[in-house]
Each structure stands twice: as structure tokens, then as C-alpha cells.
Amino acid sequence: MAVDQTLHQGGWRGRYANGTSFTVSIANVEGFHAKLRYQRDGVNKYQDMLIKDNAFRIGDTKFTLTGNGKAQIKNVVTDAASGQTYLGTAYAIRSS
Image 1 (cartoon, helix red, strand yellow):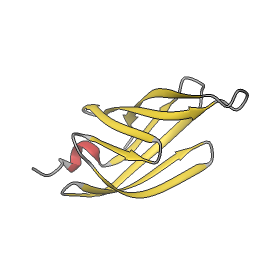
Image 2 (cartoon, helix red, strand yellow):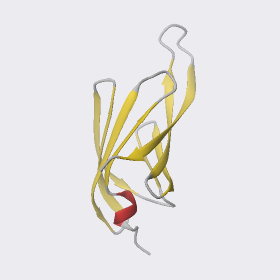
Image 3 (tube, helix red, strand yellow):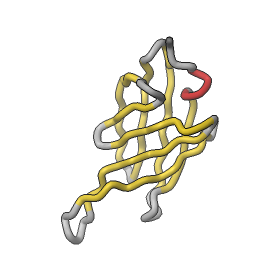
Image 4 (cartoon, one colour):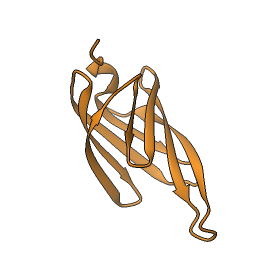
């Protein structure tokens, strides 16, 4: 069964625990495919993606739809001071 485009398509925004904000734009949802733009700290990532089980990946970031207009974002973060990596979790809401 194809992905329900009304649940995914649109703009999403949120903030990580360290205060970094991000936006995700999902467009052209068709079947299980869509186009994505992810922005964080001046970094822009564009990708054609595959949605499976209400989730998708872009680079080291995973977006999971958790409810109507709500999503969880998990991102591998590298601490600039120590060089250590950890998994940062944030929540996003649909903004459009």
C-alpha cells in the first residue's frame, strides 16, 4: 500500500536539545517515494527518498512519523570539543 501523502508532505520544524533548530521539507510524495530538503546549522541536504514504515533516512538523520503532524528526528551528532559522537533526538511538528 502506498504512503498517505497527506501525512508526510509539507514543512516540518523542530529544535535539538542543544538549541540547534532544523527544518524538513517533504514534497512530491508518490507511492513510497518523495523529495526531501533538510536544513540545520546552514547545512542543506537534498535527496530523493524512500518512505518505509512511516520513516526515512537522509544521511545520518532518521525521520519517523509518530502521529498526525508529529515526528521524531534522530541524528548522529559529533561534539566539537571532544570529538565524541552521540545520538541526538528531537521532535518536529508540521508547520505547513
